[in-house]
Image (cartoon, rainbow, N blue to C red; front, side, top):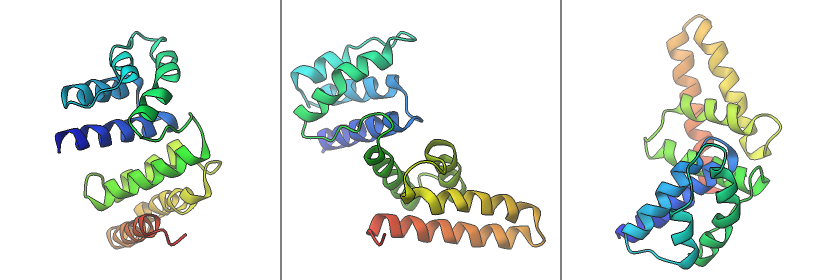
Length: 164
């Protein structure tokens, strides 16, 4: 069970790194956690020992992460790829539904890291971030914000259930 959790964390940190909000250090730490949990592969060992020195960490990840994930039967998403953005949107939607983040955090994340130019899968979340701006300054702000929260939760469910 510990090994499964470590593999999941590595996959998730790699997804978030590929879309911008995650850091190379988080991915390297997740690789170390995999080794500590008994998950092992030759390239994972190299990745776990990669440098976290400023300026070098992204080069190390670009070099070792694809093979390490492949060896573990995990998916590698190149930086800035549409597939990576879609995986990240679904990951963040799952975090919302698991009560790990708030609805507003999801929309802010989508607005900052996916943007209007990213995957169309996130377009409604980006629009809902704008809806929060209007709701916060209008009459009945608390009720309007609660309505936007409900819309974000509904959108997250649609994203996870695949109704898009």
